[in-house]
Image (tube, rainbow, N blue to C red; front, side):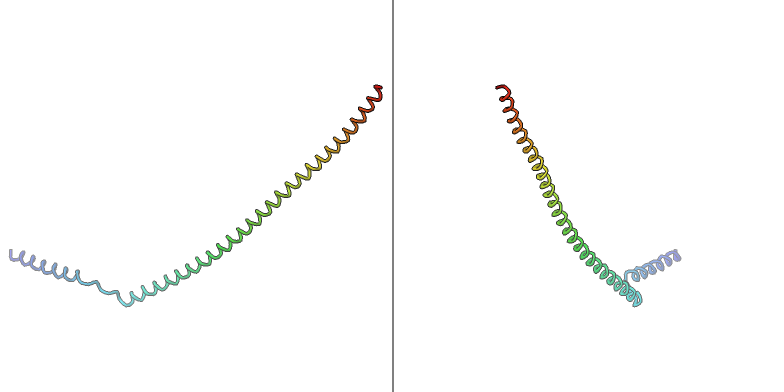
Length: 125
């Protein structure tokens, strides 16, 4: 029993020492590790700056392209309206031409009709 009590006592002391050492303040990172972290942070900051610059350039290009597309759209709409007006004018001109021809033909036929009626009356008398 003395042996087992001694073993328990040694075990208890070892456990207490281990608990005391394990619960202490964490060790500060070494100087080398701190330098590596600082270098990595600087690299990441540079990457972030480059990405930010690239985003700004892309935004600028995008806005220029949008303006260009808006101008093209406005120009296309103007051309479309111009073509519509030309088409309407062409239709009007064609209709006028046809109406004028029909009216002229109608006038000739009326004149011919009057002549024929006059001839019929002459023949009947």
